[in-house]
Length: 331
Image (cartoon, rainbow, N blue to C red; front, side, top):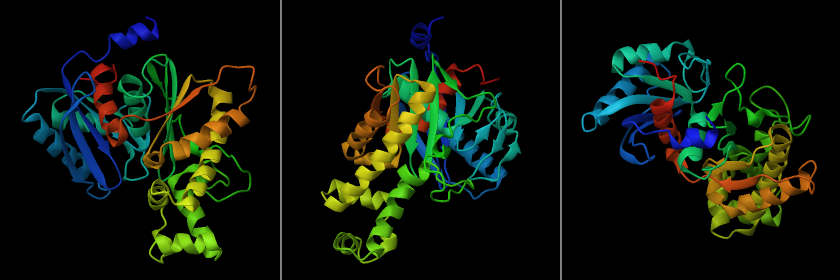
């Protein structure tokens, strides 16, 4: 069935619960077939103990299903899942190492459960209900502490041969550059993420330049207050130096997107994550840089670049919807 026809047949059965597991909170919501969130609940992430996390998931599902008839549960979490969607191979936030999570949760919840990467869930939500609707080859890039990513190609999440595709933030964009947590130097996320924006702001204030002194004053005199979110907020308030820093981030963002376009040739990039609160202050410079660095520019169609539409609920919505429509939600 062509992808457009497949899309029109998705998501017509019942309600599902989507659960987004982060390093500090577990958010859950009841989602209908149109992507609407009907009810929500959340808990603090209970440390790194896998059994405690499982119990938190059970509590959230029990709470939400008391008022709604729920057919399936989708769980999105940072980490690598096996291709079958049953085992968490590795999670950076939790002590999941080759954890057979789906089988355990299906026994506890007595419902079909789907397990997916959080970026894949968010990309699916944007394709189904958000900024990527109608696009047959969509690449999502998430700008937060680092850079995550996912692809929806011809109506399915593309996870690669081993299930770990989408680590876009670790393309090396500046050989010998800043050291990355992954162990390499010069990774994209060291130049175009929220962490990178904060680092650049803190470095600026330590130069004791007039711009740096003014920025430090706005940060309450403490350089460590200059996080990516704080710089973004100052930029939105009109601070010229913060806007300049954001424009620099946009240039790096556009360069990385041009590299991805050369490899993947998508029709659209959807950019999400906390850094996108900056809106066109980030997206405008990114589009200019993308056009300047795109291979074959002037002789090929150019992918669109759009800001994500669903905000922090995207992972929850996508996980719920995937559990409804995917054959990987086993009973």
